[in-house]
Length: 173
Length: 69
Image (cartoon, rainbow over all chains, first blue to last red; front, side, top):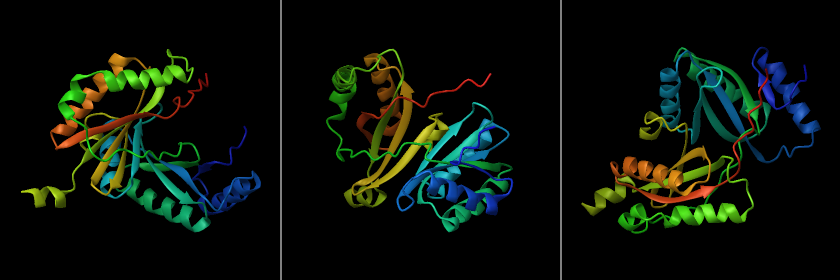
């Protein structure tokens, strides 16, 4: 079986971590820049995985997703510079995070999730008009069509909603 | 949290100057009606918490799913 250096197996963490870092460096990736690391936490049920995902957001993790293809999994995507310290610290923290929720951190994967950094306009346009109209959606589809994509295949879309901070809402009262 | 609870599978939190932004990631075929309906559903959910739609951005095709059987 081929061993993928970006997929970390937690069966022998410390030595595997160092071996993985060596393999990644040898593969030519820039070790000085931050890479997205998918920390995968497995649970017995989707309900538990979902609660864990919510807890991850509460705990300050900014990118979270849940999957159910093989087993219910909550995934935190963490951008980090890859060192033995950062990976070890992340592993220990999230292993415990999963354990106290009757889950298990089984592996993490480096570079699997794309880096996402979209600049959103920070004021909502006329909400009522925007809701009723299909114009912004049509514009998006037109743009994708212009990219010459296969329009029958799924694309990844990020939809953003903005909220006023509690502080600003309070000031307005 | 509302979004994960509502079964949106991938959620990002971004702290902007004006307040928090929630990004919901989905994979769908680019049809106007589907994108519109999805946006309306999300906007309604956000409106319950005084949130407003900021935009929709296409990033890439979803990850290839490999059938190992």
